[in-house]
Amino acid sequence: MSKLSFLLSASVGYVLGARAGRKRYEQIRSGANQLWRSQPVQSRVASAKHAATTKAAPAALGAVSTAASVASERMRAGASKVKSDPQRDVASAVTADSQGPATYPLGEGPTPA
Image 1 (tube, rainbow, N blue to C red):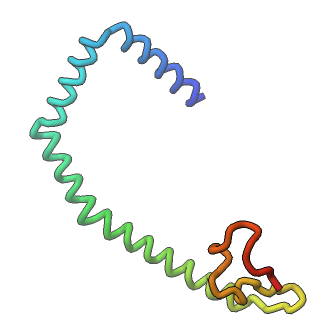
Image 2: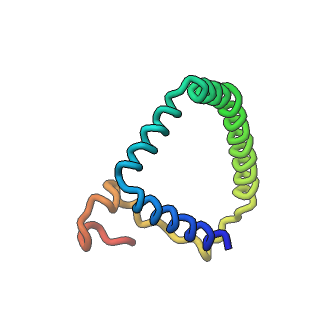
């Protein structure tokens, strides 16, 4: 239902805006710019930027760092459980090639062993 109401309100806004014309659009735009440049709005913007840099950024950094540490520990624990199986392991043909397969055009170069 929310998508339908969004589309309905967007279409009504578009129709009304188209009827108002370019002159009214420029008036609204000018008023919005004046409001944005006003002192009360800019002081709020400055305080929000300050709060974001002093409070939110360190908290986000700490959360990301903790999540990365936990993920790293879990990956190490999972990797230690992996066992080698000679029946299923595939030998790499790249190890015999000193230049690597990306240096050859398709169909040329050494053949894998």
